[in-house]
Length: 159
Image 1 (cartoon, one colour):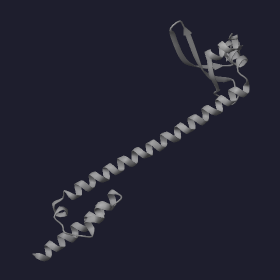
Image 2 (image 1 turned 30 degrees about the horizontal axis):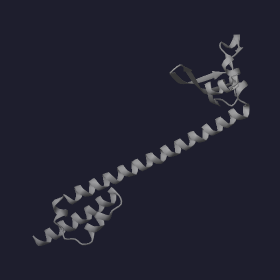
Image 3 (image 1 turned 135 degrees about the vertical axis):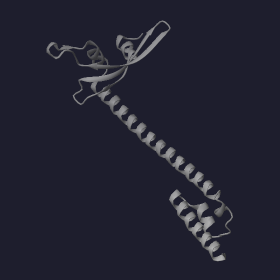
Image 4 (image 1 turned 180 degrees about the vertical axis):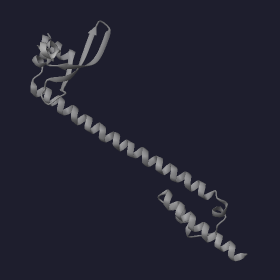
């Protein structure tokens, strides 16, 4: 047989503190009526407003009666760690996406470079492989400029 506290713990899940003073919390409220199931996040303050007519908040007191301060502290600590891990993972994903985009742009730049007739027709065995192996757009463009200047000098010497 479930006690009233057990039922309330099923209704109010994982309360966490929203401030250091521990006068406001967020809790997941689950309401089940027949087949209808609704979940919502509630922000609960210790005191009802307005300030001059402070009265204790019934929901806040109910949550405090079914969860100990230590439990709420632990839920808060866990949520903080989860959010920190989520932010770290998002940062890693963002970095990976940026690196993928950078490499795609580098690849496209190299394709454009090797579509330049002067580069395509060059027999240079030193600079062309260096362009292919370049790790950045700036490096590829700099090597391309060197190769183009070299090829243009060869052409002008033949004239």
